[in-house]
Image 1 (cartoon, rainbow, N blue to C red):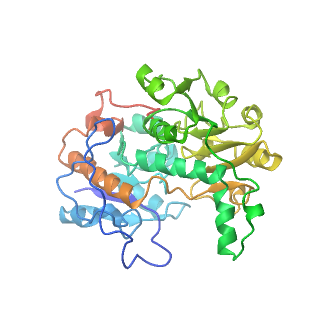
Image 2: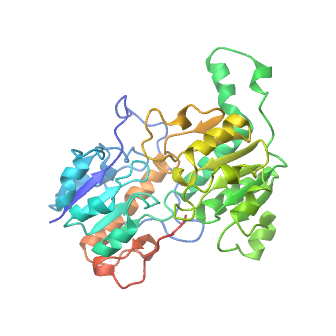
Image 3: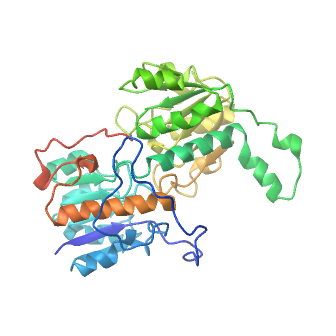
Length: 386
């Protein structure tokens, strides 16, 4: 029997919802690229429930314990005396989410003597040190595509919120005011603007598809150019690199993976080449942006707004400057953990576990690093992007 360590974000501060806003979820059978949704043998939860926090346990606890496995679910992941650090040395399986990542550093992996697989319930496994995982023969898997559209929708929402300056307008209403001149002093139409997408993978392409009806001029850059018919249908302008892209747009959305090349990419130098009054929405990874450069660009007016839901580290400390910088629309890391998305990534996590325990191949789309029994399959990538 295995020991399964599940690291999730804390339960709601006011307790679990006594009832949910909706009674059901739409039925979706395939993702836009034709990939099927997760196909576990069964699920032990009601779609639309809160599964991503500790008490939800991803809907896995009863099933795992019924099979005889030891299960530890916690939100304690920082500090020498964290539950993660105490339980990791004899854990066979670690599961966490990008929204509350269990950072599996080389030091932690060195102590994880029994660890065979690290699963991301969601997309984005950069909280796992992939070279160290490969060296130790640890499989790393995630639930590809499960929340890509969720993140794309969040991105479009934040683009509109920034350009229309929605957040201050809402606050005026909440505060009892009717200050129309104040409310619209930074509000513009998105129509006619140049909008650029950095990395047109599953999320980036979904953003392009969703923004096209707003009658904007769409630009993008990616290592792999989109098919000509897609470029023609959406009216896309391709740029060879990010430096060309940012000079041509009013709005930039970021969907690249965090790599050595992208870490700190949005720095003072790059931001200085953007049009004055540009907007950035970054739902990819916080460390792609130079934290203090973003603050300086907002304070100087080089940027008119910055939004996203990714920070470094996560959770962000209370004194993180992005909490108080001007003209921001930041949220906690929530874009990919809507109740709809949770249903998919919880089911996908169970599908991965079923394959792992039954010693069957894990779906190829889910493998980031193929270790242990999967070594030699060629199914691994450092820069898998969504």
